[in-house]
Image (cartoon, rainbow, N blue to C red; front, side, top):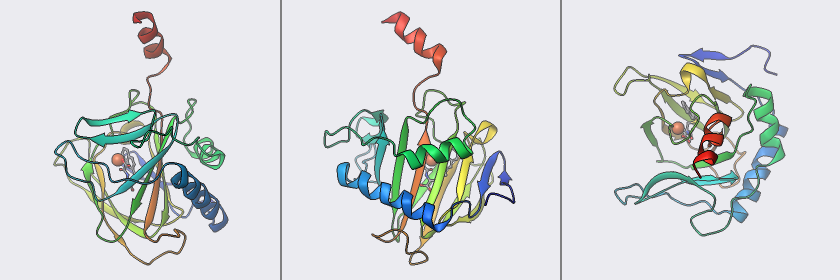
Amino acid sequence: MTGRGPIDIGGVKIWKAALDRATQERLMECVERIAEVAPFFHPETRGGRKMSVRMTSAGICGWVSDRRGYRYERRHPAGMPWPAMPTPFLDLWDRFAACDRAPESCLVNHYVAGVRMGLHQDRDEADLTAPVLSISLGDDALFRIGTLRRGGPTRSLWLSSGDVVLLAGEGRLVHHGIDRIRPGTSRIVPWGGRINLTMRVVTGGDASRSEAEAQD
Ligand code: MD3
Ligand code: FE
């Protein structure tokens, strides 16, 4: 099913239609279970504005944002620990990420009509040599990929349900965002819209961990 090999845009690898419908449905069931335990919320920016995308997480830590800034936390803003990373998510990491470290967090983003995510870099993780793996479920989304430099040229492409994107190596720090979704193009997400899963390694590698312990 990944027979044609990935598209490569500046080090960002994209496998179109890599996941069959049964796999997408199984992943979606996992997302529903995550959202029952750790409900979706609108993160607030440092300036106190609510982001239009709704988010939750699974794994040992999850991404949060509020007036104190962006960071990974061990608990949901409402206080509960994040649900464990589902096994089907780990299976995808093993299949696509080519990384000897396990993912520590899966950020779950929910987009509906009118929601966008501005161009940004993901750099809240301690080990920026570890990849990020993205899975699209539900409605099509217009994905924009830029360069390492802010303000560089960008390319746009549509991501559809079952597409897999790997941000590794030179692609890890490129600017990227979601301009819009095309509502009603898929029926995989029971609430409608689009779900994006991003699996991440959040803490530093062995070297930085033992350094941190030595300083404690
Ligand atoms: C390129 N999510 O959660 S996924 C994010 O579709 C995020 O929800 C978008 O950007 C979404 O941070 C885009 C593709 C993606 C994810 C992480 C990346 C592209 C990336 C990290 C580095 C470079
Ligand atoms: Fe991102």
